[in-house]
Length: 511
Image (cartoon, rainbow, N blue to C red):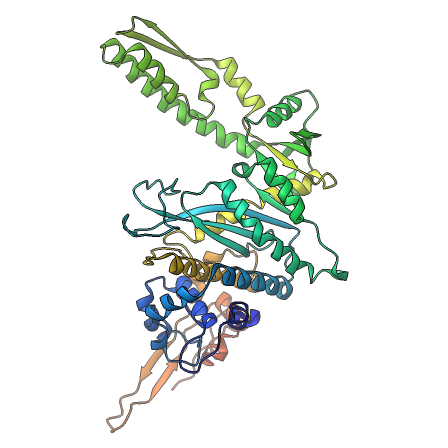
């Protein structure tokens, strides 16, 4: 995949990195680390040993040239602008080589835990809202832009772990314009294309909507249900006959559509009702309600024992019911004296049914693409899960994990993240080339089982013993991988070990 993209040349050219006959270039180092992150994640000190065990050669240089010290020295010389230019160049090459559609792009953010000491200076590793719920660790944020087709990362941005979603997207806008211009060069007639940026509700801001329009991107975002425009749309959708069933693959989804003003913006709102989402949210509400009942009963016992005051009981009960939707149908009454409160609560069944009918199982989408059909907008929004799927691949134990990371400065963290995203991109492209319907994990597990055995013959004579590379028996899926990825270039014995037409391994000739 890296050869088809010309990855090494693209990175070196974008970053202005000179070639040397004694040291690896930046593109070669990025490819080596990316392969390590995908195949055998570990520290940079293990990189030479990993490269020594790989059949394909990243470079003509010896493995010892790719060490951790060289990586960190390179990181100090590479700027954010260099990495941004390299991303745009690779994105254009990917779209051109694999004919990916870029009319819909999904964006989301996540963060990764680091074990950097609190006294270590740095701008990226900060204490923030960690996705892993580890509040004792400093985290590094990652924003990712993914194509709608085939889960391919096109652009990313590393940011401090304590940044807000809106601040991240605002800083991202500077990179979106060069990407738009680069992709437009390959459009027929050189005409600017209309591209839709899909985000979740954490990125809503009227100012960002205006800036996106200036940059040249359309907007599709899920509004928070507490937003004023979302509440109006839900009220309209609750009217008889407002929800209409879609067709085809979305026949189980109903949509209510209206065009209205969201602040000073002219927007189309779609209220989507999904039975799967409704069932999941009802299970979640039931679990939260059971836990809230236990906590309220415990709080009532504390009040009866005089261990909490009336104001404390009121404050704690509000905190217990702050979980999503519980405050709308759980009624709490606090009586008695101020020093010995009497707490009672009840579940209003009518309000709960009203909640299930008007709120649960529904999302409100907001877009400026008034001409797009409802089916197309729903499918575009559902592409958001592809970013989350890529994030799961970068977590510990997954395909291309970001961590464990032993970087201690911002420059190394940025280059390490770039290498991880490149590895993630190569896996996605390999899946596109092999079988888009196959999961990336299944494909990588099958590739991981293709291992050659090195035999050394003992002849009893002096001199270096002869070595023979013995290829393994391959399944039908692995045989197809040998053909698609041209693995015979690195081990010709793999071609002879491919299965025959009957689907059974060929018998080895007697030696």
